[in-house]
Amino acid sequence: MTNPLDGLAAALADGSVEIVDLTHTLDPDFPVIVLPPEFGQCARFRMEEVSAYDGRGPAWKWHNISMNEHTGTHFDAPIHWVSGRDVANGAVDEIDPSVFVGPVVVIDCSEGAARNDDFELTPEIIVAWEAEHGSIPADSWVLMRTDWSKRRGADYLNMADDGPHSPGPTPAAIEKLLARNIRGFGTETVGTDAGQGAHYVPPYPAHYLLHGAGKYGLQCLSNLDRLPPTGAMLIAPPLKIKGGTGSPLRVLALVPARTGSGENA
Ligand code: MN
Image (cartoon, rainbow, N blue to C red):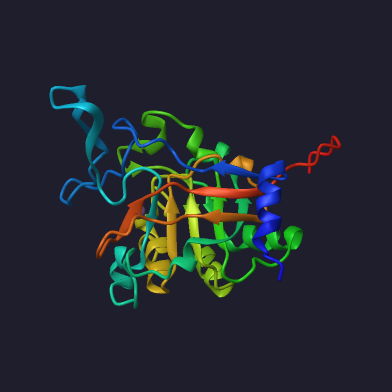
């Protein structure tokens, strides 16, 4: 009997499949979402030294850490949103682990997002993408590339007097993705929704519609410019937090290496 994983092991060993890290470093300075002041707030990452090869522990170094479930590069489970509160197996510890490994497609919105902080992913953009790359396969992750992950400091949340300004999907775009029966939707911004996503009907359509349909979210992703439009595999297992609504995680992509023949496909 042949083992189908032999091909993958060989491809990893000879470099024809590369691992791309889509994760930001967990760092107290990394921005977290800021809600209007009447709401509870998301805690940043914190790290406290317990010992460092010293009197508190002569042969070992370790830290206590704390954060919100939605701090840094993180996963959103269906129960994160009120629309998904009754989804079966909707907490991170209940989700079938097969969800955490699967195909991924990338819709490149980086040009539009460079021109317009409030750039919208629309059904028209999805249809144009499919005309070029084929239909979005069922049960795939769909990532919206904006190159927002290259922003630093205050430019990342991009707060103004009327709230944050960052790109995201329209309600109709999310409906289009749900019609393709996607697995989940991911972004480079602090949430799966646009900064001004409260003004759509329904408000925060990515959260409301995706989680209501039992789908998943990823946000604060990085390095999406290193992924092909199709043909990569995503590995994104959240921490197994009992009843957890989400979790920081390491997100990796398996990517076919570009050929050495000078072709930049
Ligand atoms: Mn979240």
